[in-house]
Length: 356
Length: 255
Image 1 (tube, each protein chain N blue to C red):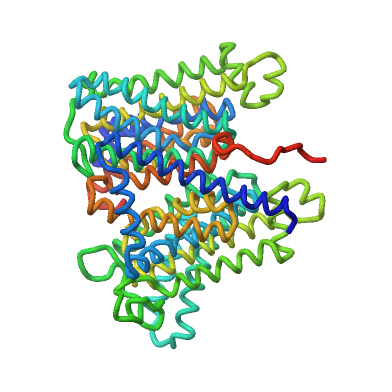
Image 2: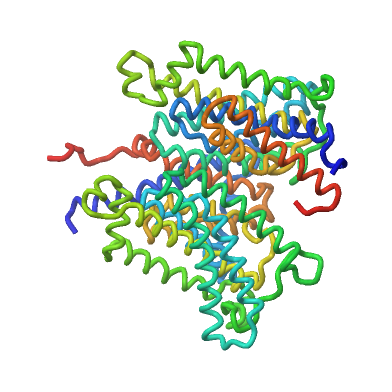
């Protein structure tokens, strides 16, 4: 790597870090305004997220779906698409996984588990293929379409889980996942933890590596990124933009479906209505924070997982409501999105003479 | 069938459509200037919340309406500064506004009222005849906007800025100023629509009470081909669906 490249990479890293620092400062100001002690609150936040091994495991468990949804948003972004529909893709992925994982009896784990995960990915991929197809063939804006697909998914799953697929009992949930389709949890392996952190986290790490490989080491990835940078130039270079747009949406949707499948098979062991506090939307923030790079997405997911779990502890031990965390997350997105603000506050040291 | 299709259904349609109409017109003004506004949902939510808070403290719902307009405008100003001045992606900035509104309203609900889900009851807007005043305003707004956009110089400039900013700039229109004005007006209208929801239709704020109406309004505007009359028609259609759903649920058909 040349010296300039290293400096550029450091700058890439400085923007999210600067955004996080500014976000925490804004949070501190809000806490002071309501008469709370920011240092106490942030200490509680940190302890809640990383205080002991069990808490740390729970933070990783909270981060797991965000890795998938973050990757989903980032992959579509790399192709120039804004997939706001990850939440809906996560829902249909969870539905497919809950159905296959809960109802298909008599299969050995080695077949049933992969089949169930694939069902979730396929459902998410197909759900995303619809807006992808409409964008490629009809030029319909994918932002509007994916938002509308979200509404269809909420209503569909709401109806099915509360009615058709409902397991006996008070809460709207599907039948439990069969043992042959569950993702093993940490709490089942060791006796010092009761965490619901599942092997899905490792699948998330593998997914990061695969997406990195696909985007930067394969022809398809090169073509997807070319379309993202300039569809017309890509077309001129002999790339079929429309086909790449559909492909990118399918892969993105499959990752969203995988997020839903992990929740259903590992964390909740059934589809419980209201299982997602907005993982798909948090994924947008995670992807932005991670600059649409798989490593960045992983770090972003860990941060947001830590903020959520730490925030709950902060809510429990101090007078600061957990919803402040959502405000913090929004402020961080603002600062990352408007990275010029960061550039003004942390000016570039090296003189920029432009391209020579 | 006769139980379902009554005059009451038409009235309910108008009531359900009101927040959609006002928000859709706001979205239209912003999009006509070239700013994509997926933050309508968040601005509506902030408007609904502010209306209740101001009405609670002053006892006068009209101040609540005013507060909602100001709050929606302020949120829009943030959206404007971030996406116009700092050139952030408009969709990203809009998403951040939506997340911010969801968190901020619940956070303040706990700080101000000490509750997590539903605010205390506050003074609501009076009924003028069968409807609250904002229903009439919504209809008026559609025709006013139609006139302003198609028959005034300001409307022509707005459309020029959205369709071809560099051409508009060449003939001396201040593109950036036009966009700021448009985005703030759109936020004020979305805030007002939120007030129609919280102190027009009801007298409380409920966590996340907009339930996607901002997005539906956005869809209504697009469905109506970015024209005020079209947005009105689409909003009425969606409002009808809403009203019908409540009706059907009343006689035992799932939503």
